[in-house]
Length: 102
Image (cartoon, rainbow, N blue to C red):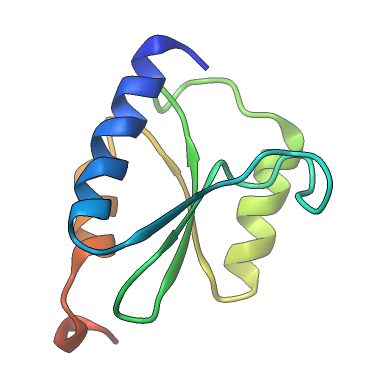
């Protein structure tokens, strides 16, 4: 992970933690499949989000990263590749209030 990606990731994780979200860093190994999203974000409103951080929209993706984002989405989970070009949209989705939930 580059320094730019780490700074970008840290900024938004801090923002969400300050609002009461739980942030779980997923590391491939015992119990976490290879390619699984980097971060699980648990909302105080009862939703869970899966995020694979990328430094840009065009950043290289590993095949298993695509597999897991697609698989989780098929399972009706909210799973995204997140990068500077889409962070505002994703951030709005994550921090919305309970009365805005579908």
